[in-house]
Amino acid sequence: MRKTLIPLVSMLFIIMALFTSCNKKADVATAPTLEQKLAKDVVLSNAIEAAKDLYLKTSGGTLNDAKSITALKSIVEKINNKTATTADYSKAEAILGMSYDGFIKELQSFGIALAKVNEKYPELAKMKQTELQATFAKAIQLNPALKSSLGIDAVVNGKVAACPLRDICNLAVTLTKLFAGDAICVAINVTTIPVIGGLLCQLVLNLGAGLLSGICNALPC
Image (cartoon, rainbow, N blue to C red; front, top):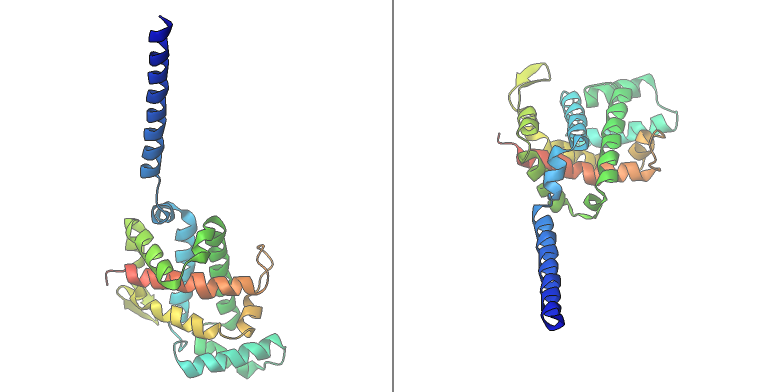
């Protein structure tokens, strides 16, 4: 009886081990990818909404021009040093297509939204730009409603434009050039979130540029 019982017990342990192993494999197989998690997460939707606001509100200016970016950097430095004149503010508004304070507020909102994405998905900060672009593009593709909201008509510079965000890559390039100096980083620094100094700037420069390019790559138009 004992000889018969031992093989039966051994067999039971083997079956249990196999069952546990199969369950672990099934869990791994069904675990959502980073893109799938991002696609359903409101933090990505909020970051994209902030990007849309920033793009649409500055698209009426001349921010894509290299000379304008250089001029804006100079004005930002003057504003930070409290030596800016009324003429400087007027020039900044002409470059941006909106008030300077409004632009900084939009940049802060964008940075805060990116900070929340970064906090929830720290692995994004370790990716290269091409990986970020592909990840965000895939996440947008996986969310039809989000993708659709990026392609709708909008008023740009006083005119209705179809799929206005197809040129959003230009904003990624602009931010890369604009954030090459420290002045704009000082201007957008906020104390409402646990992000110190240049970290918010880096989020806009790296994660932000990846998001903007990802939006551009995901759009059908």
